[in-house]
Image 1 (spheres, rainbow, N blue to C red):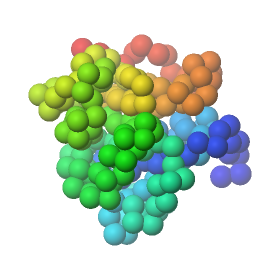
Image 2 (tube, one colour; image 1 turned 120 degrees about the vertical axis):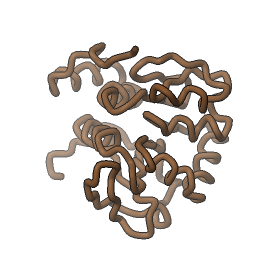
Image 3 (tube, helix red, strand yellow; image 1 turned 135 degrees about the horizontal axis):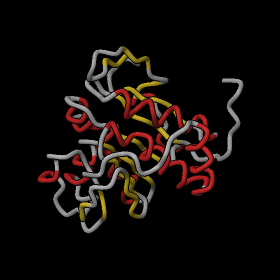
Image 4 (cartoon, helix red, strand yellow; image 1 turned 180 degrees about the horizontal axis):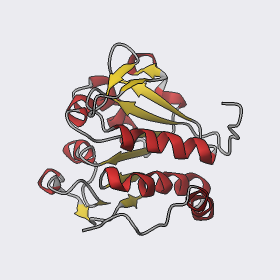
Amino acid sequence: MSDFHQKTDKKTAVFLADGSEEIEALTVVDLLYRAGIPVQTVSVNKTPEVLSSHGVRIIADTTVDRLNFDELDMLVLPGGMPGTTNLQNCETLIRELRRFFAEGRRISAICAAPTILAGLGMLEGKHATCFPGQESNMAGAVLTREPATQDGNIITGRGMGCSIPFALKIVSHYLGSEAADTLAAQIVYTPGRASAS
């Protein structure tokens, strides 16, 4: 990790459960690392080992029970099934999501995971997006169907194919749109290509 050039003191955690969509999780980790934003992976299991929705074994940096949430600025939830359900069943994570929301701190979720936020009443009147077919589980949200949407302290993404714009939205939040555009060019990503249909 010697090539990491930190650009902000704000720290982000990406939460992983058995059945999480690995591209949605690791794209965020990759792009935040490239941008110089401190990020760590957190298993909601008792051990750091997580088996993704497609059978990829991931060793997280730490576990949710060992995490100091007070050091964090943003919580990120990838989707996937049954990963979204397993995240939702983590009492520690849900408790901290409620606290972060009450304190106006930052929360991001992609694919099916925004339904967790909706279920907690966090998307009432907020512009948000989610995986097609999950709209009925987004009570209170103003659905945009965009690849990634930010409304105040909440960022949501549509699905695996929207992982890059979702991650870039997080980068833009911390470092500005110019930094996000520069990073997009560096990874040869052309914004606007992710489907919004």
